[in-house]
Image (cartoon, rainbow, N blue to C red):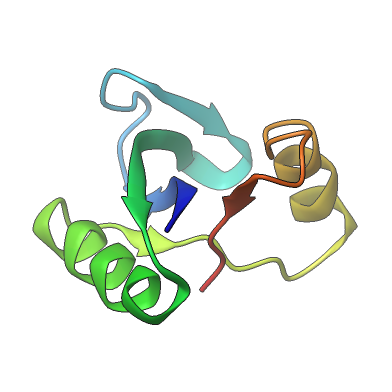
Length: 85
């Protein structure tokens, strides 16, 4: 088992975000919701299910801006992981 950091991206048409989320360009909300203790085999389905329960999407990096944002929020050790969609 390993410790998986779960980060979610949520797109809303509002000018504010739920607690724990950052409002970034184009009204997109980004934030870290929880940590999971899980295995690689279970992590993806757990992340997808948790994202769906709050109408969010797993992190997907499309460009350098996304990369820079999530790089500073990813765990800085080899024992923790950021799960990407």
